[in-house]
Length: 155
Image 1 (cartoon, rainbow, N blue to C red):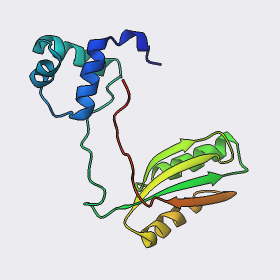
Image 2: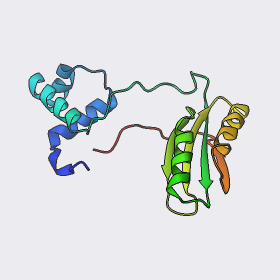
Image 3: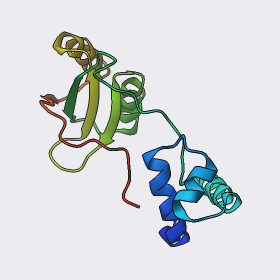
């Protein structure tokens, strides 16, 4: 686990800047937070080495790619063995339309976030999900409107 105490206020500023635009140069980030370019580079290198910065990616426009429907799929199972979980998680992780996969506490055991083009495309993915293994209950909710979306963590 990452020790929050190792992150000082300057690191937090760097992390906020990188989350807003990961394509900026070290000198641009350094200028923005009043730091020398070399010091900024060293800190970013350390943040990467420590695993705090996992990777830098491009965030794509879901609608522009024609995959504008988001479904949240709640799954309940009556199987709780390691073998069942391994089989289920391996199968679900291979479904590229599943962009998030969470194990939950509460009434449902798993939550999947699925992005697809439309309802018929979702039905195709749904059939993949239910064919993975024995499931007790599958409930799907479709997002009507995205009110807030961010990849930025509060640092």
